[in-house]
Length: 135
Image 1: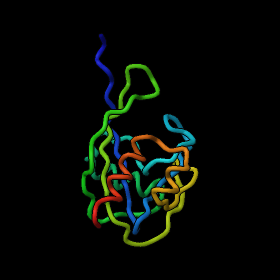
Image 2 (image 1 turned 135 degrees about the vertical axis):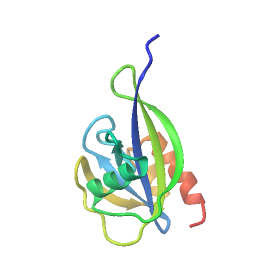
Image 3 (image 1 turned 90 degrees about the vertical axis):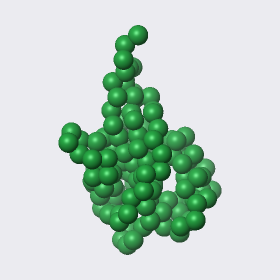
């Protein structure tokens, strides 16, 4: 059995009240699905630096204190490829998101609204936990 190619990736669950920021993916592997802003970690980049970069590239927003939430292993689009996804959480400080990079749209969603969207299962599961935590 071949050893899978592991690609480090990050995402940011940015919270504003009882809503989380989601982007609609414009490219594979999750094209057309809503998820937290995020993407691949570039060579030499820390996980936190990658999370901050991806958040800014996809939404134009920045976050102050990022807290690691969970680490997931997700199947990649190509056979033998997996993503090691580190999900961070943070509180929204200011500004409105503007979709950029591979994000088709960016917006704030409640848990009820998320349940009605085409959304990645891991995003919805994390959202339920994050929104149950006190701010």
